[in-house]
Length: 474
Image 1 (cartoon, rainbow, N blue to C red):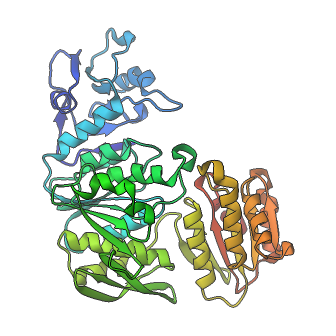
Image 2 (image 1 turned 90 degrees about the vertical axis):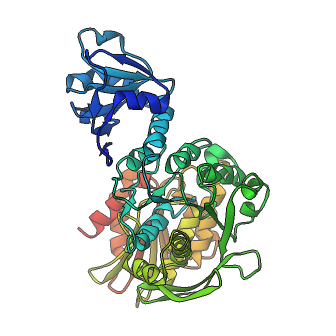
């Protein structure tokens, strides 16, 4: 991963100041400058600062000398390697490289003058980010995180890529445990922060949905004193004990579909018309009718409402909301709907959790087709002790929304089991256990797929279901 500094060059003395590090200068002249930052030594050169981080499989400190040999003279790390003799480089040494880099990004952010929105949630983070960005760029010069740079190292790097002319920025923040979102929020200093939902992803590590909520709510840690925290009002957990820490120091607004006095914003009249989702939004005494998104699914209306409210809170108006939502188009391997040889293809292979599985199956059920509705579903990861039951529940949900089901993976077989328990004819269900059975899966689908059918592909990223799509429509 490599970025170019958006605000111009930095020197190592400033980095040391930002992260309270010690400088060890072996260049002969203090003040090494750089205009790029990378975390991969293969991308290092004489204009780049290499950040040596420790990962589960790779320790960047093992590649410091390699970076120097490529011309790199600026290193942020936890220790100076013993074989530095004869090498010319300037080091800023800290206790923890990732934490220090976060502090460096926070210092860098202090010189920026832009309105920021920070987004997290168990599912739909990237979709909400892209919807929000589509609206805000109608009014402001916008920086939005590229791709999926939502990690504790990726998000601060992306922030430092924003240039001096940016008036607004939208940042996505993901996590796998406690203490990851908080430093990202402190970097971004958001004017609006949001938790769009609390799902089942990360149960393997965090054990309970309450713990997931605690970890997600760290997004409020860097919130401006007059900023807003948007929360899913239909989620009881976000009205309970977990929110008390923030209730007195944040302006909390609840967004939901439940028509009650506790929701500050109401999303209703959600409907699908052709390839579009429409909804009405009530907020701040105003009614925004027939807001339109060029994608299918109830979840797009919810995500669109969060995006619209965030945009309103930083100064956008109704025209900009309508134009931005209409301009949105799904990207990457997220819900891409297309026609292939007379078949309606819904490719949603980026990731999966029980909540997003159900949303995708609702899209399949709601799509207009003349033939069968077929689902190809695979394993969902990081669901913890309840993984088996959560897979079976998805299967039961699928039984009422599909005419035929194919599954891939050991846990995918439990989806098939649940579908049969849910009433889907077992002759209409087939399981394939691993990647070695991809060809058999493709063959089985081909035997049953006909012109006029719709077919959904959905699984966790590790299942690489796009391989099946490529072979099926090759």
